[in-house]
Each structure stands twice: as structure tokens, then as C-alpha cells.
Length: 448
Image (cartoon, rainbow, N blue to C red; front, side, top):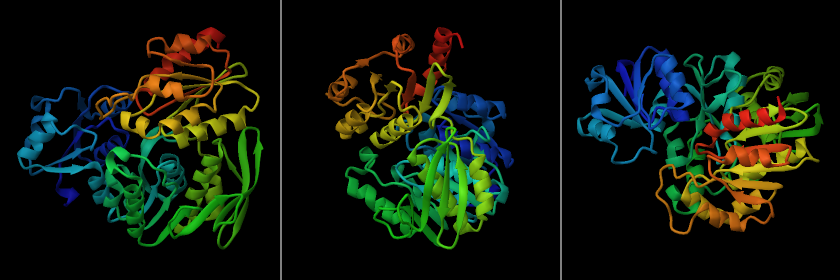
């Protein structure tokens, strides 16, 4: 497919974090862009602010007339869209070029030198760090989160080098052609798609086989490549780790050199691993270690990845996308590292009935690492309910005493009743839309 001949690009699910990055890319490259999403969000609002037309009713009448020229229109959709979607079926039935998001990303990046970040956890933060490192190299980066430095999920550069988040969902990353790539983790996930963990593991092996130049892997993963680790021997090793004034300072040994006193501001051992993975990719590509160090020191983070919404002596509110047990444990570890003497309240919205069922005991173990837990109802996303799989069922498995089910409407009131100094709001559903209301309530209580 020749993208240069395309005049219009229509997105079904345009408000998705990965979809909106590609929509922005096409818009700034002179294409006419429009699309549908289920509900208005801050992302759809930001797209409308750059004159991308977005509507929220699934009806053919809402497709702009200029997009009805099938020869000049590309249709992009996310796999999360239901199969009975009216607009999607209209485009398919009438002979339009209709591609999944991953296929389009593969087309955009196939003629670039592609740096890809894969893994069941850590890929959004790692790719955002890498995008920031590669920004002076004029790379174009497609991210799965909003990078704080740019307030965007697209870092626009030139068309010679690309940075992409390689998503294992629906085997999407197999549409990419990476030159250098890393794999951060291979924990069981997306079993609603893969069925069994072995099929997920095989997809990562298939992805690794597509890497043309160099594969970099977290030490311990069952893939062959350059390894990275913190405080243990690896091709890329972070060591002499210190915490100074709330930030990490560490040294790094590479296969050919070393660099001292790297500063990185994101908390948690997992984030140090993310920084190390990004450093390794950039080093293999050819960026100087001094330049990498400079960019790591100025990286501000990713929205909803341990994002501080309030940070005072009296109270701290943290917003995080964590929706898998491993990610929740990482948040718990980070909080305990930063605030070892304080009580911590976790507010969690489970994401998907199938994921809750598949990892219920692991979720309970992870949530039991906090002092208090408030549990919201399961966010269904693309799924129908599964009998017996409820937040009440999950709550019973959590072993701490201070735990409670709560509705969205009463969440703010329950939080301000708590004596915990640290509040962490966790989940990948619509819990992020509740954060500002909670923040305002807490500020009101503490007169901030």
C-alpha cells in the first residue's frame, strides 16, 4: 500500500492511545483525518483541538462526505471495536482499504530504521524514555502513553528513524519490522486472546525472530540477545544505585564502556530497568552515552505511570495505569521505597472479567501489599460478564483487614475518610477519569 496516495484517513476507535498517535501523525503530514469513538475523553478533545473531526454515534450518516471516496480513503480500526460495528461493516462491505492499527503502524515504519519496545509490562514507559533519548536524533516516536515532556503520545521527527511500542495484544507486534528491539517482560497476560500462556510465549519468540539487527532482553527471559539487569551481571548493568532527594543515581556498564552518575527521576526498580533498556537500545543504535545520560536526567515521565497528582507533606495522590498483578506489585514496591513509614491506600478498578478470573489469586496477593484497599466494580471493556467473577469475589481473597467495595459515586468520600497519607489509584479502565474529582476532594479536605 502506498500511503502517499491516500488523502483521507478515518479511524474507528480514534480515542485509543495508540490510535490517536497515528491520527496525529497523519494529520501533521497533511492528510484529512476524522473518526469515531464511543465517548468523549481528554484524548478526543485534544484531537478536536487540532481540527480532527470526532463523533460519538456509530452511524454511516456521520462519516464525512469526502471520506466516501474509497480510492483516496484509508480506514483504520482497533481490534477492540465490536464485530457488529455499523461503520466498520459499511467500509468493509463497500470495498474500502480497511486495516488494523498495527498494520498501519507497520506500513508507516517499514521504510524507517525501527526501534521497537515489546513486553507485557514496561513497554510504554520504556518506549517513552527511548523516544525522549532519540528526539535529538530526529526520530518519530509512536507511544502508548502521554509523555510528560511533550504532552503527547507522538514525538514528531523525520522519517528515517522510528520508535514504536510493540504491542503483543492480538499479536499486533508481528506486523512490525524492527531493526533493534527489546523485550522487557513475558508474563502471562491477554489469555482471553491467546488461550494459553504458551501461545503468548510463542508470539514473543516470533517477534524476536523478526528483529533484523540486535535483540535486547531483560536478564532471565528465555530469549537470546544482549541482556540488561540491575545489580547483577549482564551486558548492560546498572550498579552503585543510590536514592538522593527522591531520584535514582547509578552507574552503568555496557559491553564496551561505562558511564557514572546517571540521574533518573522515576521511582521503582522496574523504572530503573525501563531506563536501562532504553539506554541499551540507544547505545546499540549509536547515541553517545553522555547524550543518553543527559536525556535520562531530563525525562519527566508518562501520564498515568506513577504520576503524582498531589505531592505534599500531608498527603500524596498517585495515578497509575497498573492493571496486572506484576504492575500492582511494582507500584507497591515504589511507594514503599519512597514512603517507607507511611500508610498506603490502594484504589483498584479491575480490568476485564477474564483477566480478573485468570489472575484472581495474584491480584489478591498484590493488593494485600497495601495497608488499605478500595475496590471498584470490574471494568468490562470489550467483554460480557462471566458468572461468579466479580469484585466481591476478588475482595474476599485479599488478606488485609481494611478493604471495601465502593461505587464510583462514593469513591471520593471514602478516600477522604481514610487516614492513609498515600493514595494510589490503579487501573486501565475509566478510573483515570475519576482522578481529578478525587484530587479536588483531597485538596478541599487538606486546604491545599
